[in-house]
Length: 247
Image 1 (cartoon, helix red, strand yellow):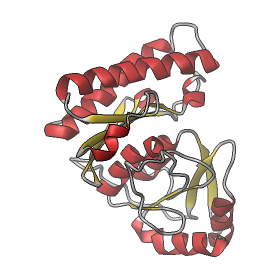
Image 2: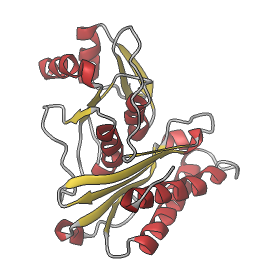
Image 3: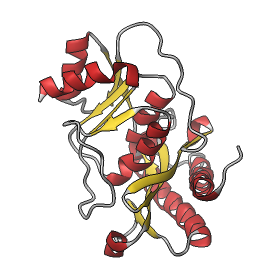
């Protein structure tokens, strides 16, 4: 894959984290101890790449102290070194991810999302090719542990099907990869949970927004960004209408 500039840096950082995370699953650790070790290893790997290749940029990471200087910076890397700690801690699961996004003056400009257990890294340029949608009911990715009422309402209104999956990044990439048609989330999320996956989804031509239809905005003072819709364009109008009717 011939990548240049910031996208290449994002991809190298995501791969570095993947290379650190995968061997840890063979150490005998499981569950929360494995997740904690993965969080630390992924953070160290990504921080090392960014410090070496973009030392002047700010970094906003789930696994590092929030530096308020990011709020006045022109370039901010928004990072989740291990998205889906619970799934990562279960050796049987592959639905976890690594997120590396770059925000430049108000916009997400480059990103990479690694799905290490699948050996994949998806980037914003070249954008992923969106597979054709198969015939059948609308498939909606939801949390495995707490499917939101809005998603259940969409499924009922459209006679769709809920598909429980792991991390936020994996669920977003499941739309990109053609596993599902939409991802509807409410009930808590942070900027690092969605920045890189949303950037990749947008590059692939997907529709992304808040539950109320407003834009997703990043590098705000409050790290919380609690809800999200990612949907294929050909079913976006009906999914967003069903979400609006549910609220």
